Image (cartoon, one colour):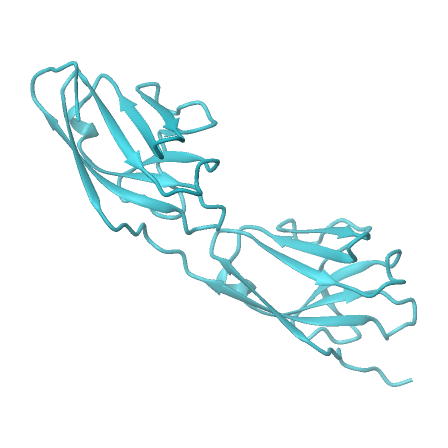
Length: 231
């Protein structure tokens, strides 16, 4: 019997970002609910396939995981810690039990570079050494349930310096955050101000879209002296 290369009737495209994750959703036909599913990488020849993850077996690459929803007949492969070399051709595959004739759907995975923080405005706040400042961060309607945070410095997309975020204990006890979902303003309070607190900060809102959080640039000025608070 001659071996066949992978054949497919459609190509699905998914996009991820460096350092983030992507979920590749793979639909399959009825009657294959009990069959093993796997992701094949590259050209996926019938022999010597590169299979980083398959249902029923430990993943060969820990960044890959697979879940199978047999009700909707969609299995999902999640890839974390994305890298540029992950870009390219994959195949959603279903074992048919018919030897070489597995079922395939071709996947095109695009990996985009991470972006620096983008903002449409800059807000300036002033505080005094030893005092406190309240940084008020407006956000758009529709993000009431999303996490908010303050990012310090240049705030790259990866390895952010986040002293405080809603829903988590503050990493720096001088920082606290409250969120008024009615006015769409969250407030970060910094106490015991120091000269090193001066500089660029970012009001950040998690969007649930990977690297594309919402940002407002903050310029924080620290002056000598002491005041209860200033904004």
